[in-house]
Structure formats: C-alpha cells, structure tokens
Image 1 (tube, helix red, strand yellow):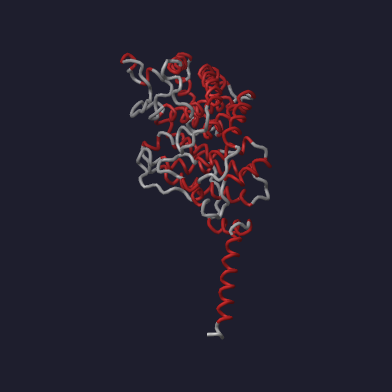
Image 2 (cartoon, one colour):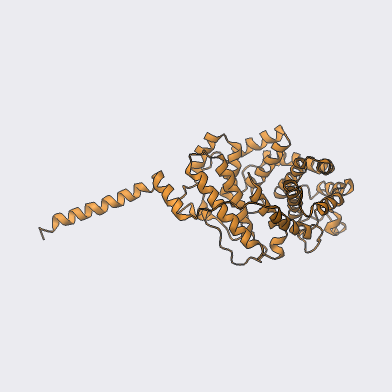
Length: 382
C-alpha cells in the first residue's frame, strides 16, 4: 500500500487542480466567448424586400375593418354605455383589440414609407383617408376623456399610438402631414398622460406582456426623439434611470413565461442602450445580463418552445421571437466594434427572426391580427 500512496496523492492533487482550473475558467472572458460561439449557428439577419412587405401588408389590410371577434376592454359607467365598441373607437375597432389595430395601422404606414412602390399603396392611402377624419378622432378622444376610460390601454396601446404618429411624420409627404395633424389632439392627450403616469409610478412593471414599463418607454422615447419633443425625451430618460440603472443580474432563468411576447430583461436592456452613453451602457450591461456562453444566458438565447401556435395567448411566443430579435439588434448597435457580443447578438437576433417568420403562418387569427407589426419592426429595426 505504501508504494501506491504517493500515486494516490498525485491523483488527488491533479483532480483538484482540474476542478479549480475549470471553476476559474468559467469566468474567463475568452472561455465564455468561445463557448458562446460554439452554442449558436451564425446566421444573417433576413432582409425585408418589397415582395415580403406586400405579403405582410395583407394582414393589416384584412383585419383593420374586421370588427369581430373583438376584445374591447372598456369600462362601462352604466347600461347606457354598453354600446358597440365601433361607436366608441371608430378608428381602432378592428384587428381583435384596440392596441393591435393601432400597431397594424403603423405597419401599413411603415411599409408604405420604406417601399414607395408597394403594391397596396393606393389601397392604404384610401384606407387612411377613410380612417383619420376629425369626426372619428373626436369620438376616440371623447372615449379617452370619459370618466372610467382615461387609463384605457395604458401604456402599451399608448406607446403604439405615439409610434403611429411618428410614422406619419416620417412619411414626410402631404398625406402623412394631414393624418398626423388630424390625429394630433388624441396624441397630445396620450403624451401628457404618459409623462404624468411615469412620474408617479413608484416602481416599474416587469411582466412579459402588455404592461411592461420598459417596452412602452422604449417606443415612446423613439416618438419623442423623432418629434424633437425634448421635454418628453428628458422625462423618459430620467425615469428610465430611476427605474433601471441600479438593476443587476436580471433573472433570465425566469424567462420566458408561457404567454410572453416581451422579454423583460431584453426590453430593459434595449431601452437602456438608448438612454445611457456607450461606456456607461457597457458597464451597466455587464452587470445586468449574464455572459453569453453561460447557462443563465441560454434562457434568452434559444427561441421559445411553442406548444400550440393557434392558442391566442400561448401564440404570443411567436411574437417574442421578433421582440427578442429587435432587442438584440439594438443592443448590438450600442456595443463597441471590438466587443465579441456585437456579432453574437446579431446572430441570435437572426435565429429568432427566422423562427418567428416560420411560425407566423401557423397561428390563425390569434396571430394574424398583430404579428405583422412585430415582424415588420424586427425586420426594420436599427
């Protein structure tokens, strides 16, 4: 036995050294980088073509005037207010619910702006002229000013309304100016209420669905910058810092829930990429998101499992692919060229985009009434 004792000691020492080395290698940036690239397939982000844009445009064109099925979400003050939703919100009464109708209008305007020769251009212009009249906007505004509906669609629908207005402005032609001017009374109310709400909100709301604070602030900030609304920009940035700057170690292992269409961690990171200067964002991101290649990162790296595409809420996960994609693209754009995550995040974005596009046609009306917007935004994000 005495002859084997030194060999046993050497073996124990060697195994211990391997365990210690592996433990410390987990935190080695080069090891993490290599592991991250081993875990993903390098893919290019799909390019939105005019042909694809025309296909996407068919979805909002098919649902904007489709009044039923519909999920209004209105609060009734009395039996006298129990009237058809079309009489209260005559512009945004199709596409199953108010907010989906809003962002499906946005989809048509963005596609028409990016592709001036879009097949459906004349049809879109005719539809917008029918939709955006002073009378209809006045009816929508009256509904938002009614006693129990002043917080209707706060803040998800509000954010998309502001994005629609900014898209009218970016159109930069007589039609866009006319539609923006017509919609402006409702936009002004929503803009002011957004500032008021975020200023009094004690803590951010963090689910993977409509009420996510970071998601709405992100879209509102884009509107504020496009319209040169400096007061709104500063208000949103200040509250974003108040809400999120001290956050560390986002719990990616809680993602996704079974009905998410927003990644809470990535929505927050995408917002902060716009709020913080590049160096400050780099330092914040390092403390907030797990390193690519780690087990924790895999929860937001791999596309979600979707057990039933046609289920109206489980099907949200198709949209999550698109939201993750545009988030990764935005985060990547904020990183330094030498940061290995820049290329990796774009590849992860591409994987999610392809997955989302492959799942769209499987959803039925549960996805047809809204997914074209998320696909368009992901394909045109900057």
